[in-house]
View (tube, rainbow, N blue to C red):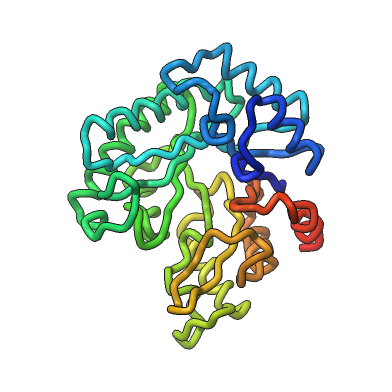
Length: 291
């Protein structure tokens, strides 16, 4: 599996050239998740994207051995304000239309919540909201099928519309479309209480058996749809709640178990480091080469 990065974790840059040359210092050939406006704040708004501009971004990255694995276009597809939701969907459709220029068919988003900022709201999990989500996905899929690109969804436990592997599989089964795929983030899908042991308890550091139990559960449901992996880690705070934004080597999950299972299930897709620490990135890459 090829190891890459979520580009805006490397930092913010004033040009694509400076982004690409910095990534090249860590790894000679890299896949990235690119959210242009996050990593290059001075880049044009989506309404000003042109095929020529996006092609120049791809060509500059490619010149440094960097290619795009996921185009990050994270929206709230169930935004409670109809006008805001429309703007979000149009932004995603713009990225879908430019996938050839990006050199990547996969346009990725999380699945939003009933709150504008995608924070926790119990209404997120009501059928009314789920139906709204399906309506947004159906609209985006029509555009993806028109352009030959792919809507790529990422689940987040507790707070987002798609908060479990079961709900994600329900979406996949609803549409049965080759233009709909999954970004698998095992830490995002981990319960906010942590990974459960075989006996039902939860430890501050999950055993290998607990990790395997959690990952097998997800892969049994989602393996055929996964086109990218997000790799990060978590710890539990003093109250036993997950803090799920830790760099891969700064948390409690043994990623060697996850890599073993990905190979067992035949999943050979880019693994994109998320919430990475640039200061320890070379050590992380060296560790990953051992597992």
